[in-house]
Length: 180
Image (cartoon, rainbow, N blue to C red):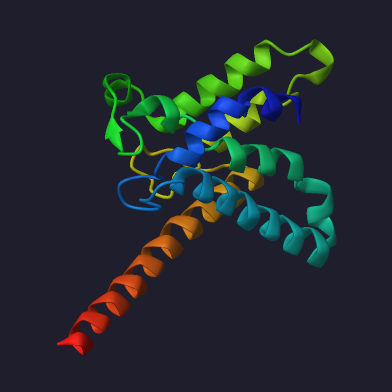
């Protein structure tokens, strides 16, 4: 909680609310914040399902780690992209990808917290952030249950948004045809 409060100050939340989610998904004002919350809610639902349905998962899933990973997974876009609300890669973003920027945020802000408030398993959180992308273009694969959950929640949010855009566009084109 302390890490999330440090990372998501008012100015960063406002910047996320103005940003688009990406060039291929959530490509509208506020899309980054919508996608982040969407990913978090989906991940939370996956946790609830498994933790309530299968007793062993109650002991092995760290839900706090899942929620933190889902909320932080794209915060690096605030650095790796510029010119919001557009989604142009920044000079830095051309060198350092969003996942790595998210790890830098988490690690940097965690180091500023008092010892008793620091994330205890920062390695696991960083693994979640590095493997949260819906594609495996960097060869990074989730290896812990929490990373698998966040990866799938992110992927579901991205693909559902794409499907929603296709339906919207189809409806828009149908309205144009009906007007003719």
